Length: 548
Image 1 (cartoon, one colour):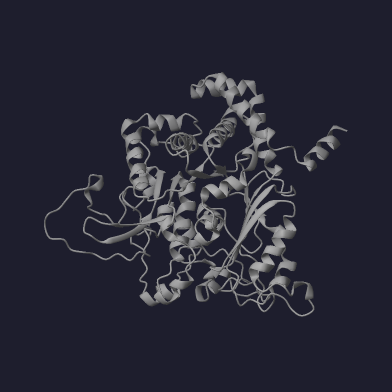
Image 2 (cartoon, one colour):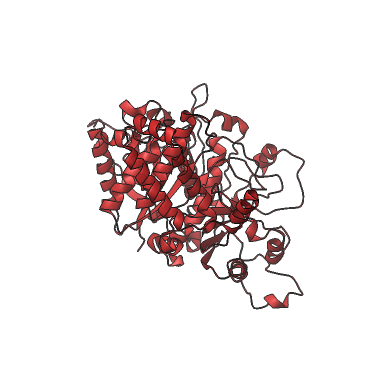
């Protein structure tokens, strides 16, 4: 029996990532009855079956998302599937009903002329994956919100709008008290409770919650409040949190100090109630085979691809791990902070061998998506996922007798991980299914990536846009590594050092109506966290050199 997971997304950027993530999951659905035997991922863990009030079957995410009304653009608050449903106060109609079919792959985006953009996808295209409309720079520049490219249909209870009295400036407000202010609205607070209970009661065997949110704004503080409630009511359920850390300005005034301290306060609150935190940044994506822009539409697609792969460990039943097992292994000794690294795509050379590919692009070269991390630190615990290596891909050539005992990609990958993580409590999984790409995933791959994700030595003279328009990348192999190591020291230490600025602390306490004692309690909590992450050796050596 699958164990369900409920996802919470809070804020504009979290919903950008979420939109891509749900699209990617839906792109990987298997519709061809002949290929059902190849199914690995149990989609019912994150999705639910339902019925509209007309009796039409639906398949929607177990999702609660939070944002301001303007982010919805043309997306109705109740979504498209349940238009007219009275479950959230809609208008009922007893007259004749004309049924209008809407393809699940049409999006909500509108052109500047107001014309809807939609895709007509045949059953054959859906099964074979032949249909892919490449998104070019024009579409990227036209994207105004995550709702412009969200393909997955939502349940009418999924969307939760921030109360009007705190909506203005909420996404960009660095106000730590904003979360409490939202929940002081009795109607909003009751709405959240009702929506959450609906999704929880729909689960037969809830294993936990996934939370995606910003950390340095009002959404971070709202997430803190929700985490506290979840911890009280569902203390036995796992809570995997992915906070998004923006590139904050250097501190040169109280205005630039505030978002840094808000981040520190929220980080402390999250660590108290979460099972595991994996901070990610959209400002450092050093991936050699990608040519992406800095806009949210592009950067969120990269993070979504990494999250989708890393979460396979508790979405594939054959792994034998659920969210609680997964987080308890990775957060040994109460170290709840982890980092996420990825190879996107995982480098497989066309007409080569897996051993040769690994020798040219070792796993240790994966790009770390977590900010302020010293990657040279040896992990204490780690979880590694590799997906999309074809079973028929040649393992090695002649003259490699030391590898003769390896009979599958899993054997060779496990050996490589064993070499990298010797002395570390690590576990790994190889998934056969690649990451399937469909419109509106952006065209961000370099021109030497083939349509099935292999790397070729041939560099196309065509532009990325023109090449992908005729032969788009439809799937890619991906690897991820969730690691717990002392390299996370810097992130926490940077937060602790903020409390040395007594002048700004005083101003912050007045502006946020917080007692100074509350701020000092947070400082002590972060110092307790810091004690679990010893100073990395290279930082100790650097500090000694600087002092000399």
